Image 1: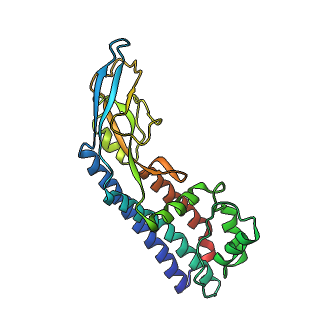
Image 2 (image 1 turned 45 degrees about the vertical axis):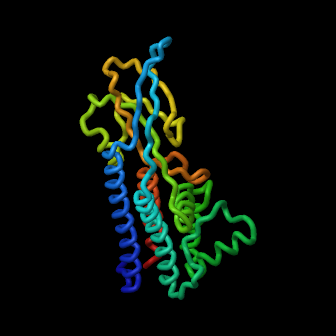
Image 3 (image 1 turned 135 degrees about the vertical axis):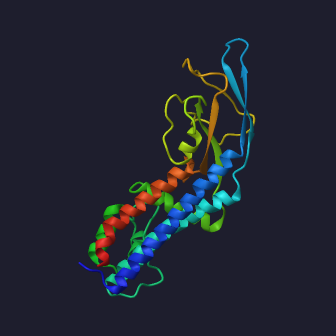
Length: 265
C-alpha cells in the first residue's frame, strides 16, 4: 500500500532523526578514538617481592571531556525524539490532531494505577486501538523493555545536565597479539583472546592497584591496558560502555519503528 503524502512526510521525518542519531554515534566513535590516542591513562607495573605476581598501579586517569559527553547526549536525544515523531505520526495517521501531551510512552513500571493509566492514555490519545495495543505489546517500561527505559532515563538526565561518563579499564592485552586492536575495539568489536576482563573496578581512578594471574606464555611485561568510556549514572547506566549503549538503543528504536510503521498507512 502506498503512503499518503502526509504519511510519507512523517516517515521521512522519522528517518531523518535516525540519520542524525547515526551521525552523532559516528562522531562519538571518532571523539573516543581521539581520546584514546591522547594516552589518557597511565599504569605502573611492579612485582610483589613475595609472590612475584605483577602488581599494576593506576597513575593517571584523564576525566572525560565535556564534548564527548555532549555528543553522547545528542545521540540519545535524537533516538528518543524519533519515537516521539513516531507517536505524532500515529495520531495523524488516524486523521486526528495530536495534543501537546502526545509522545511515545515510556515509564518506570507497567502502568497499573489509575493515575499511571491516565498518563498513558493521554500520551497515546488519538491513535487507533490497534496502534495502542501494539505499543503495549512492546512493554515500554522498566522490567518490560529495559533498553527503552534506559534510553528514556538517560535523555531526561541529559535535558538537565551533562551525562556523567568515566574511564574504565576493561582488558589486559598483549600488544604483540594483534596490530590495531585498539581501533578494532573502538569500532565496537569484541576483544579477542588473550584478554583478562576487569569489570570489578569502576570508575577506575588514580591509585587503584590490582593484579592479574596470567599464565599465557605469550604474555610479556609490556601488557597494554585498553580503556573504554562508560556511563556513570547509578541506577540507569553504570559501567556500561557508551558506544555499546548507543548501538543497542539504536537497534531497539529501529525495531519499534519496524513494529509500528504499518499503522502510519
